[in-house]
Image (cartoon, rainbow, N blue to C red; front, side, top):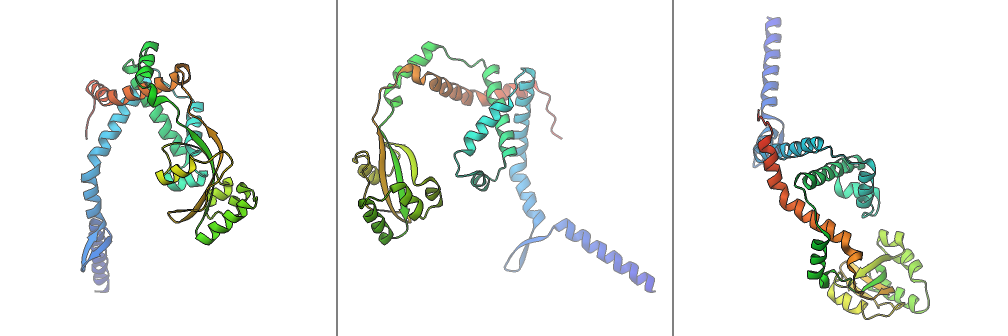
Length: 282
């Protein structure tokens, strides 16, 4: 009798376990109504599975074609592009936190993106003559001209009192860079001693731009109220607008036109490759 009871208890335990596994764990409750994990996963699969599978198929036919065409990507190309991307962040940790990627993931994505680009260029025979580049330059000359830019350094503090004290110190001859490093509440400004680099006209908020671009080299603003606090900006250098020559932007124009052509040709090219490929959906 004890043995039968034990077997019955074990069976009930296994059945309840199977029931739990079938439903999945409860991930939310609404007025006592359970929402289980499996229901969420099923809906996610319906919504994203087909699109994700399609994306991977497209990627695979492109990578297969790259292999057929003998296209390779060098380690140097990938590393240079990765360094360029990471350098746009305050640090490698900042890059990881904001993108949720590590360097290995980034380099793999870059490698695939470069393969895709080169494959479309070669597969669709994308190229531009010098005359086409020059025609684009002539038609877009005004847009290609470099606008006036100023090299700025910034102090950012949270209160009006801090900003006024900093301004008084600056007028008394305090070193702007050292004061930014000492007083700024923003960690990146502290680290860079307030250096913002060259800022082109049209980038800043208009009210601030109107003030900054009237300053002479070496002059600084008074405290300016901005989101989250107060800022003081100093103009350290000025680059006046200069006429751009075709030879200076020829390569940039070429890359731009190639990028546009790759973008517009990509979907059609993928369709062509899929029609030639043997694709079986299980």
